[in-house]
Image (cartoon, rainbow, N blue to C red; front, side, top):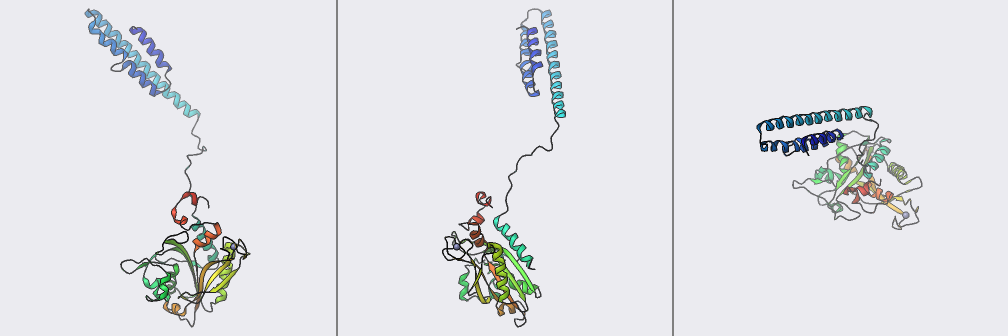
Amino acid sequence: MNIAEVEKKALAEISKVKTPKNLDGFRIKYLGRKGEINNFLSEIPELPRQEDRKKAGILINEVKGRIEEALALRDKDLKNQSLKKVEKEPFDITEPGKTVPLGSIHPITKFREFVRDTFSQLGFEEVYAPHIEEDSYNFGLLNISPDHPSRDLWDTLYLENGDLLRTHTSNIQVREMEKRKPPIKVMSFDRCFRYESVDPHHDHTFTQFDLLYIDKKVSMVHLKFLSDLFLKKVFGERTKTRFRPKYYPFVEPGVGVDALCPFCEGKGCRICGREGWFEIAGAGLVHPQVIKNGGLDPDEYSGLAWGFGPDRILMIKLGIDDIRHFNKGDLRFLKQF
Ligand SMILES: [Zn+2]
């Protein structure tokens, strides 16, 4: 192919190029160091006559110039075309963006909102107490001395300095009595920790709800009312509340609060373990010694304390078979709620 044919081919190809990037390929093909035009230049010294070498040089440089010009023109055209395309089809702000996967609210958090709403309507205020707690607020001031046999009920994680990870949310009780004047109506829905061997029903980290109501003449009637109201809200109007005598060092009398199984209504089924009832909460009237420890006069004031494990209630209500799901962070579990 002579230089005129190469020029013709180059100009034809360049005029058909569709993108600026492809244009670079043709620039290399014709004008690159090993390109077709340079091939002609390298042949010049082989021409025998000085005059021909001069002519050939001029000719090749002219062709090179025209190809460069064609490349520049085509480049400009392509850029103008894409600009026009953008102008013609402007960015559509209504077009859906990239989908970012959304999380869902953890079932415990949802339940916490529900419980908080229920009791704040009755005038209870949510309070917080330290997770790393002094022995006294977790045990001693709640009538549980170091040698008290009931300490065995709580398998406790101790720190080297003698503090501990609180075993229940009841550590709010004396703290709030010290801070406030009766009537005291507070609640806590928070994490607790125990040195448990982990199984489907026990985890080292779990949630607890505590309610404390101290005023003049607070009695078991208040306790029954609050228990019944709450259990009906959770399990439906047809459920019933039952009190059984139970021992806790910080209440006198103490009761276990049971709810009538909402699935069999007392007949006994697989879910309630044929009992017809679920043990839901521990409660009672605040022990006079605990009221005294909080700086109040037990002859003037009485109180009720009420606590349950939200994990356990949710397991019953939602049919969850393993408490460890709550803390695993497995999306397959969490997305169901
Ligand atoms: Zn049942």
